[in-house]
Amino acid sequence: MIFCGDKAPTISRRKFLRQTAAAGAYASLAPLALADTPQLITLSPPPPPTELYQVDEAFLEQAESANFKFFWEQTNPYTGIVRDRCNAINPDKSELGSIASTGFGLTALCIGESRGYVPYYEARNRVLNTLRFLWKKLPNHRGFFYHWANIDTGERLWDSEVSSVDTAILLCGVLTCRAYFQHSEVSELAELIFNRVDWTWLSEDTQILPHGWRPETGFLQYRWDNYSEMMMMYLLGLGSSTYPLAATAWDAWKRVPFEYDEIRYIGSFAPLFVHQYSQAWFDFRDKRDRYADYFQNSILATEAHKRFCLDLSTEFPDYSDSLWGITASDSPRGYVIWGGPPATGPIDGTVVPCATGGSLPFMPQDTIRVQETIKNHYGDKAWTRYGFVDAFNPLTNWYDTDVVGIDTGISMLMAENARTGFVWNTFMKNREAQKGMERAGFKPYKPPQPTQASKTIPAS
Image (cartoon, rainbow, N blue to C red; front, side, top):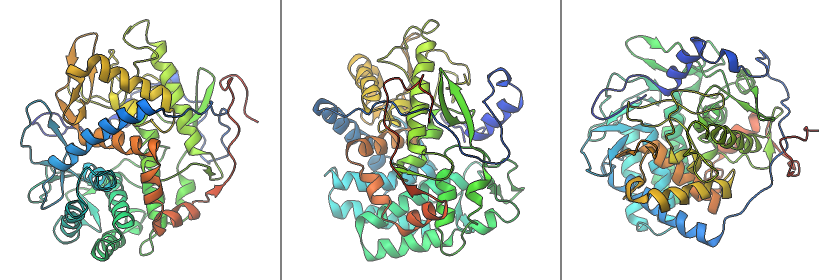
């Protein structure tokens, strides 16, 4: 859902993209193919790998510490529900909680304890309070949770839908806590919460999972039928021992090849976040299914996005090798779904820090350069107690005052993965994650060697 200020959310990110695509906004920028049956996708060769330097470690430590403060301070400690967003300049007391933010927040507790931001017992007790509330009190339907909830009571807000993908993000946080804390009650509650989710209900008449369900109207009309952030949802469903998805569900959604500046990758008509969210938890490195190497694919998509932004620099001169990145975010006109390629939304020179923050493991030096540029050159307006504001535009001197939970979350988790692989290593200890990838057909393999001329040398 899109939410801004104290007004009701209007439309989900995914619904907005569907409506725009249906209106023909992308007709002149069509992908290479729209195959009904998935098939082997030939990607471009990977670009050369890069490493983080010590100065980058110092910056990322500062960023993660600031991000953690959001999840620690903007959470009801008794329910564990995390605010969807907050004004970082003049903190508000909004009751609007997000189950996706809560999933990121649970994972942030694991990172925070491991890095000494919070004592072990305080982090573990916060996790226990959250899991107890999720199991016993937070309204759900067949194990799936409503998108928006009151952070104090858990009450459904804004007539929101039971959300399939937001529940998946929450479950990723739940399972990360089970693997990290190794505590009997944490493990028991996490298993109860996960095993309650009825994936067979969600896939009752289709292998293409719906976006959600409302008690007033039933299933939403939109389906997760194309490559996007939904990979985590299918893999969790495949990993269930109580209500598993059929293995063929992994083959049912489309993997559409896109090309930009001779970079060929699997994509969709959506901002950069779709290449990041599943990979915050699931470790796709050195693995592939029968279609693609999705980690390499996210590297290629990030490189294509960088070039897309640089190509816009003639129109928006703030974009450069040191300042780029557009994904769904706030704007002076409210929440906007923008990015590319292909160009999506009314791009106006706005920079969204979580675009590069969420891609830190894919292109470390390119993305850290942007992150440090924002902090060093715009820090007095773009940096807050909780890290970066959600978005800013140096051309118009507009700076957001809000930080958004899911955007802060993807930045924090991917910073930690870029540094240590901690979230990947912890989450993948869960048998459900392992089983999901096995049933989807993932196997270890040796990725192709990087090449300096990755955009011009065809894949073998």
